[in-house]
Image (cartoon, rainbow, N blue to C red):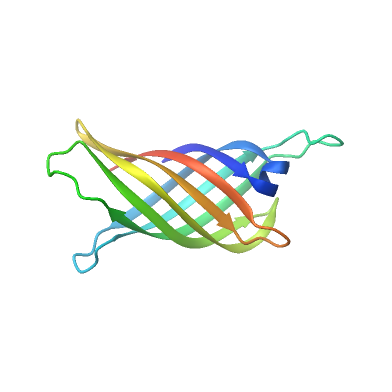
Length: 144
């Protein structure tokens, strides 16, 4: 998966829009009403001119575990919608050390000719020292 990441709040004051790459593994246990997704992602946020000085770009590694609730769709539907939320560990040698964070958002699955794809938007809140680091990545990916 890949996409664009928008820093928000105090993180957005010192970092610019960036890019994001990641991979995921998702399973749907029959006994649960939700699917479980594990993810590893890397986000690179751009530097920013903040008046007296320019900031450098910053990278954030994350590992998250998420629950996905799929909304009902017809069996032959080409699209279906879902809600996603979870928790994880975030690390940035540029911005903060290893910290706990939460995320929540929504997405859409696409059944295309020969493969499946998805698009989603999520809000990430990393509980960093002094203030939280927040961002909204818009991600698109292909499922195998």
